Length: 85
Image 1 (tube, rainbow, N blue to C red):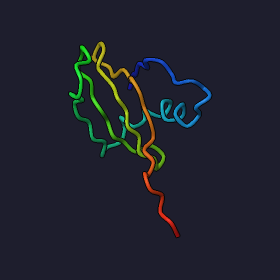
Image 2 (spheres, rainbow, N blue to C red):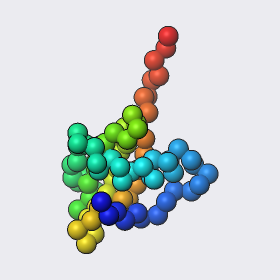
Image 3 (cartoon, rainbow, N blue to C red):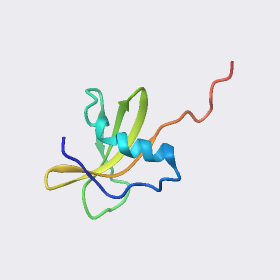
């Protein structure tokens, strides 16, 4: 799939950089959930995709430009309260 990326996050934040690099693979997840993001007026239709890549849940914000997804942002979901042994 052909993708377009807005701009990569700073290299100093490696986990976010990795999520951004892997975001394209989230579109290949057969169980991915994609829905419209209507929280604000972005001036274009914006979508949120939840997909699994390498056993990590990624949240990918994207829009469509020239009929291909343009990734706006991506991050890995982490548990709010880690489980304790």
